[in-house]
Image: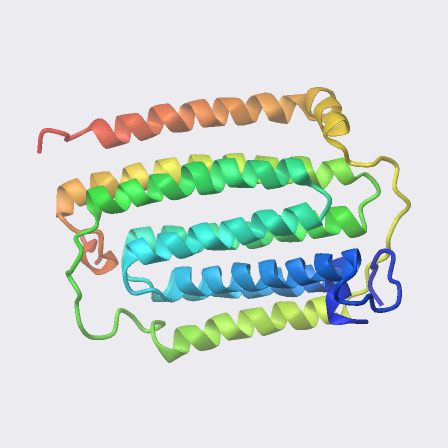
Length: 108
Length: 182
């Protein structure tokens, strides 16, 4: 098992996706602006897509299914980003801030 | 031992296989560095730049997973559309300074790092222990087969995705237009 044949191993991709997922979680809990949290959630989606593609390449009997699923994840992520950003812009118009601590109108 | 394809003995660095492995290592590093930049950078613009770097690395990983079409879509959709949209939103909505001091919440700081670290370690240990068996392939996963599958087995989902995207565009316009005069 050499370092140069890592790309032929399922576990490499699983570890990489786990690390990306961890970075996304870290960004999600530490960012204080809404856009930062959206960026972190994109990292989480990328990690999920990598897992799908890795299993698709190494274990699935039909390698088209994972690719199609990843394409659907991309489409959903694009829709989510568009809606999320327009909500963020609407929030900015009303509060003049996208800091999560300023959005406390519904807090009891 | 989890499935791995065509394991041979270690190739030399300057053979075709060795250079492929080297490019893979570089792209893996690019992905991880981009991810670290995008979750730790202070300014949001730098975070978006890190996200772009990370997505380019992910596209290269897709290429290594035998899916050039998905790699191209990753570049087009994520790098070309989503990141640019986020950059526009930052220009429209993010006041550059407004650095508040003090902790942002109970989970920011070391506790957040511990949370993320535990999640990562848990996932890695789980992947290490799990056993996956490889099944015999029934197709090659080429672009042609993907097209056939998209228009036969998955045609319903395909149409639904287009409706979702249409509604998302209209909804985004409606939400962002309201209160434009303020």
